[in-house]
Image (cartoon, rainbow, N blue to C red; front, side, top):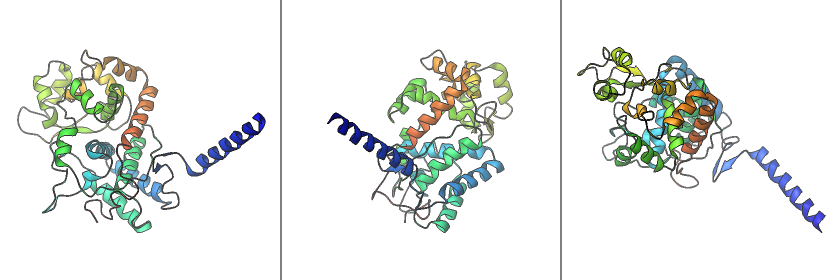
Length: 321
């Protein structure tokens, strides 16, 4: 009898393993192979478009990654951030953290147009954002992760949610920890995700106050920034978020240790507080940073997705159907 039971469970385990190999991994209603038969060209179209965009402008990789973050942290990963304002609708693009800041919409539009041509009404804008973020990191030398797909798009947005849920460049360490905790992230995962600032640039208006009022800033670093960011004017002048801003690496953490964090919120991660040890870990071990970043990004991409019959698959990412 025991042998028969063992045989049954062995066969069941083997069958289950075969299903995982055949259909891919999944979480709830999301799956790595969601589009394998629905839209086989999905992955190639997104990757090719992202690689082209990043090749044309390296900063675009950071912009696409940021779009995904600013989408997921409001009401979940539902592409609400992509909705344009209309006469009867206010989206999230004019929220304080987004206005004159988030970009990359044309790249998403380009991907959506290609996918609608190949697989009309199949691929959601939310899934495009998730895939584009991963491919952007990979294009700049960072780690990849197995994104799960099957999200659907929202039919609404939340200006108030964008204003309240997205941390600012002036955030304190306690505010950062609280903001990420509200989304289910640990303090270490917050530090890992903050490592996204190893790529991209920020506007003078975002870091001016740190430049002229913070004491924990390297003097020569500050001096190098002042010509491009005077006490008044030049609000939209850009400076790199770390010293290798077109490569996804762990230099960001080295910069923090040397008090070369561009944003006040960046330097808060290494300022004699509870995050210092994690910053030192990621500075000395890039493999650990890459692993933790990929894991945290996968977790973020699964924040409150719309699935099944919820939401819709927008045919134009900027407006509802």
